[in-house]
Image (cartoon, rainbow, N blue to C red):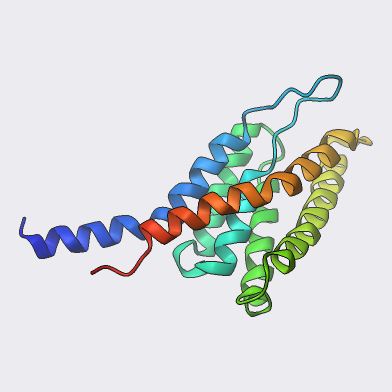
Length: 172
């Protein structure tokens, strides 16, 4: 292969960065974190990834990819098939439509928007789970997941931003 072909291959590979990071988030999201005295939960890393890339590079993580990643997470968690896929696609659509609201604004504006997304995703997730299991599901694990998700969002998006600056920079 000549150098031009390698360069093009490298560019295409780098453009997969958002999808690869989101897939990693799916796998990390299914590893429960034990907090003493509380149910085992995991922050919703996939939601963080979809929210972040929907603002900054939605063309590199399109809705069909978000849907497939949501189905993978549904399959790994054993919950209602399509629950996370639905939530993630809705978040992708809403945030992509409102991305101008966040671009160029302070991180606090982005984080506030994310808090609204987490609130909505938590509520929808809990309601659909109640309907699916035909019982009133204990809301504490879902609320704790929402709180953890919101609390560690700044750290995770800092990592995403660093990776994006390195992997998605314009090629020389």
